[in-house]
Picture 1 (cartoon, helix red, strand yellow):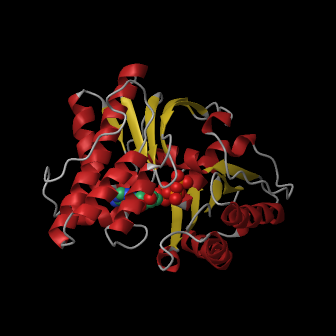
Picture 2: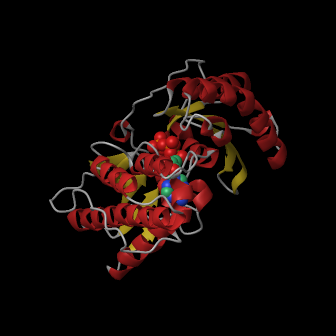
Length: 339
Ligand SMILES: Nc1ncnc2c1ncn2[C@@H]1O[C@H](COP(=O)(O)OP(=O)(O)OP(=O)(O)O)[C@@H](O)[C@H]1O
Ligand SMILES: [Mg+2]
């Protein structure tokens, strides 16, 4: 069985084909970063127009790379939410229309379930149950995962997501959008401990996060210090260390609270090398295990959508051409899948 997956929830057009026997047969991604960089953030109307331009050519490229034709596809999965409504509509409309024309089921996929299950595409996937930290551009959530579709929210950010905070501080440091990876790069030259930033909400019980105060603290520091490259690197280092420590403390706490011994970290910020190394050390010191997707499957991609599509294909019916997208959608609303 083969599923075509389409991702258009924000500023990446992703298309992939997943085969239940052979794994990923194709995985194509087109990033709109250069289009939005001029504006310092994603412009929804430009995003959806660019998805319109890129989705069908990427589908053709994926089919051709995999040496497949329409008749070889058993289902079409698309991201139905959460995300930007006009961007979601593109993938949903194309996906649903193709499924209708090909007389196969269409599968409306939850973007964060895609991120959460991305480590399942790796050679040593985690077994259930586990704790998942989803850390991306719009989400910072801790979830207890007891099976596919069995998700219990343990805690989340009460304001900014970690990725959003990375991008905003990067902007104040004069870095291009999206600044998360660029901030991380200059942080490598930074001196640890020259500036020390708070670890928000770690001094009280609970699994929620808040990054807005940390962001203000970093912004005030940037306004007060010299504007040379070394100082900027030191500030970036202090900010990255504060975010990573905060996430690590809450992950350990979530494992203690649930009694679970496996941790999955996914979403765009999990591509951060400092985060990957430091949290791995901390979790392994506890005798627990941590699982990450490879960096290119941390940020948005079609592979994770095709994978979830395959898992959910048996419960889906032939496309009726009814396109529904959900810009806001809780993971806890998903139905469980028996595997
Ligand atoms: N190496 C890195 N270090 C820090 N942040 C990073 C890194 N790589 C990517 N990011 C951040 O990850 C975010 C993008 O992740 P992703 O593509 O999963 O987000 P999104 O799809 O926009 O949001 P969501 O998945 O919550 O809907 C951006 O904020 C980006 O700066
Ligand atoms: Mg995402």
